[in-house]
Figure 1 (cartoon, rainbow, N blue to C red):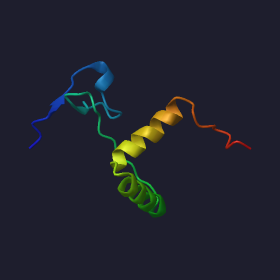
Figure 2: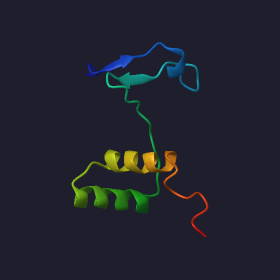
Figure 3: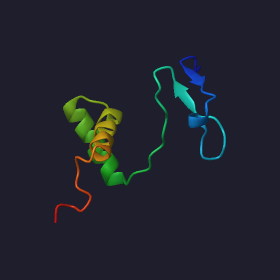
Figure 4: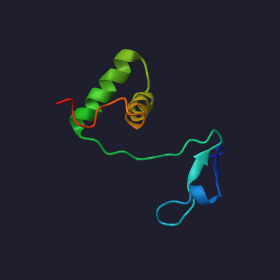
Length: 76
């Protein structure tokens, strides 16, 4: 049951193929992410050790990149 989901019918919520995107009431949008097996295992271990969700760690990393906190040239 997806009772906590709703459809947004606004221009900014149109997907790349022209359809609407499902978002939660709090404005969360679902994205799928494919990562290499070793990174997936490292993420799982970090989440377990820090008692955090994998999604929380991914969101933290994404915010750091979008805020420019990480150097795009690798520091070299």
